[in-house]
Length: 268
Image 1 (cartoon, rainbow, N blue to C red):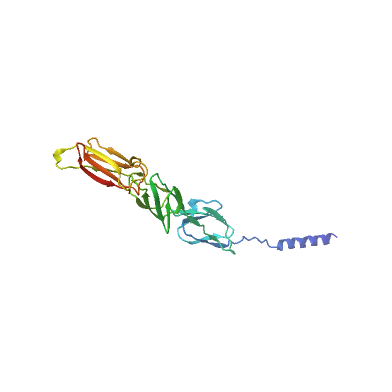
Image 2 (tube, helix red, strand yellow):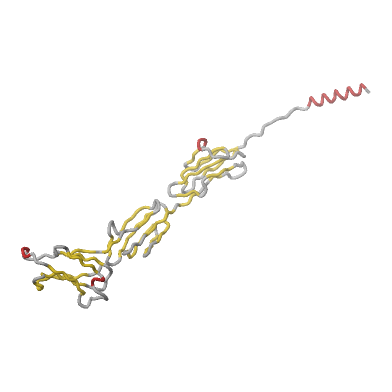
């Protein structure tokens, strides 16, 4: 019995020593990532890791490829060009050697609000933006894409005029904007002259409806007449339109009414 036991132990030792130990590391597999800059994208930064780190990122300003590794997560962050808004600003991607690996964020054209204000005395304002046009008769707004050329023309009501600046203009839409030209009541001054100049008469001014051109109401319902202190001139200011009417402005010498001059007043 003792002899058999010794042999078995010896065989066991030989078997154990003859089994080789095997140890190997798995090889890293490359997985190329396509970086695509779509319309409106200024740049894309890509780095290793689940959190984007600008200091370690590779920045792409044109489409290219990133040498990724299968199973190793990448982080990316995009920057939009002026006038565009990113649909998705950042994200992650875990590349696969068997799949299609693409980082291709998109951006939408940014639009801004263009407000058109119709003030009292303004009839309408017409705007043209790109291939579109719209006429406003009351205050309103439209959305206009960044970089679009805008032109406008304002038309005051009869008896009104643009009080300052121009009745038209143009600009390029780069931010929210407002068109609101100021309007004021139209007025004008009439000055008398006489011969001989040495006479220097005392003057009287009257304003009446022209024959067959009268409207409902008095002329003072439509026009305010202000005589200067020296009575040598008069300023007429429109209160409301009288498009189909006509007035006669008369200036005469107070001490001799036969010496007079007249002019017509219409609303335009």
